[in-house]
Image: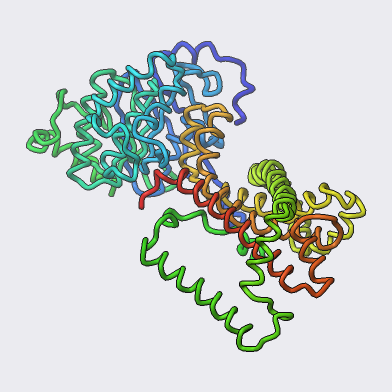
Length: 268
Length: 268
């Protein structure tokens, strides 16, 4: 990262304050096998407001996951600047929570122990963890399954446990990388409803990567469409649909259909 | 790679507890008694016991040795040597295996040397070890240690190579301290590999201890076998072999117990 040596820019600090997350001219190039390099992201500018739910859609390999991984500290951008609350990523001490498509649960740990990991890493005082876990288990409708192991649960329930661990971590920013991509469409819609319900309680910023355009429009305040590799932003669409939303009711909404069409044509 | 594959056994499977149940136990006993019967009848039918002794003679000898306290003396000596060697190999080998996975470049530099040492028949080191470490306990422990060390090193390394990257990444995004990841992810992940190493290590530590005893010692099962063979006492040799077999079987039972305890969570 070449930009870290720059002196703090007062003007930028001031203007960036309004945004929760600010990606500025992000470029990512990976070294590929055989000495080639692959340009994954090119000049991506994206800002997310506090409490905003932003979905990213785009063809496979367009770098949408990479953008999330940068924010989570797993990937270093080749160039560009990322700020959270106006502070650089390394100065930021706020929690960023990540959720993968795969459930990434500890296979030997029970539902409760898996969720506990989030609370422990968030530094929740030991004597408050029990109560917190109980609330989360209720919230996610996992009561009665506390002592099950991941392999005894369905795919949907495993993702609910992952979500529980994420919530227990109390992140300021939620990064969700196709979290329900591996689920059947019915379970996916149920999980979407669940996410909306839980998100409406806390209203944190969310960056949500998905292949499912219906899902993106249903959940989001904004949908960002990426082009094929190297990923650039093709469309940044504000979704003006009233909340609370119900996934099934939305399908009958004309405006919903119009948004879907718009995104489809941007993808083509 | 071929050499490595031989010793990096698959992680312990879950089913070794009770496969088949009563019928299996019965059939195993039938095979056992058939072998004993064949052996005994061979002697009765005219094969000179000088060559193959006989089950009844061996049984009698073991009984005498047990009564005179010799059996306990030799067995406990060999057990101590092999046990200390195994323990030392565990304590030294596991951190080295972890370091091999952690410091990839250093590992690439060291790999040919490690593999050369690993491929060297450690048995050939026994005379040297006796010069270096004396004819007492220490040289036997070191022999057992040197035969088992690589098993732990290579298995732990292999186990860490297969670790679920997403799982580790997830803990990184939550800024989990290294000790937390070690405790909650790496060590539980390695349990099956540790058990597999123990399973192989028990047999090999006995090899190391007994070989060193054969070359220079004044007690232990290996010494007793060597001593008996020197006097053409085939019965004594077989009595020693039977004791060694029993030690190994007992060791494997302990491992099976450990495995059952630690893999209780696994899908069956």
